[in-house]
Amino acid sequence: METILSLCIGIGLSAACGFRVFVPLLVMSVAAIMGWFEPMKGFEWLTMPSVCIGLAVATVCEIGAYYVPWVDNVLDTIATPAALVAGTLTTMAVSTGEMSQFTSWAAALIVGGGTASAVQLSTVAVRGVSTATTGGIANPVVSTGEWISALVVSLLSFVVPVLVVIVGIIVMIIVVRWVMKKKKENAVSPLS
Image 1 (cartoon, rainbow, N blue to C red):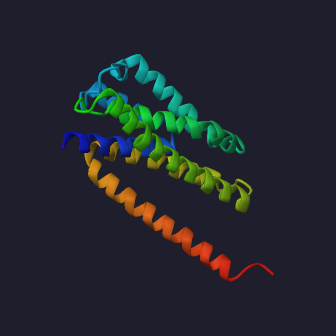
Image 2 (spheres, one colour):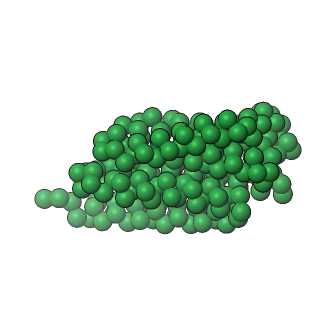
């Protein structure tokens, strides 16, 4: 049961990494310093105040950079592989010692990295649509929604991890159905 709970926390944190790379790491560092969770062996660096300060600075810089027109689109190029790495690390940091090292890293890469990548790619698509339809004027609204989502999902991952995963699955099903519906509508009524 502890393994499933830690994977749920990892999935929530890695999903948050898909919105903003540094926000979940900062939340994890603060939680570790406050004693709310103990990171997996090898991730004790999260409890260091200097790391927490560094993550806070990186978080502020990342959030601020997404408010600069066109820089936000360039950052998405960097953030996509960074989200995969951060999602893997956050999932691994909350893993339990019940699994072998290889199994833990494999699960962290597949579940954490995969979740972070899926969320990041969807945010890239949303930002692309926003840029194409509004010339980037609506991108600050999108950016605000993303960093707030990263913060809320990160916090909820520690409080109600199973609920975060269930809601995430429901949202993904809704999005997939919506995309399939739009594809079907476009196939039925092609442009003349």
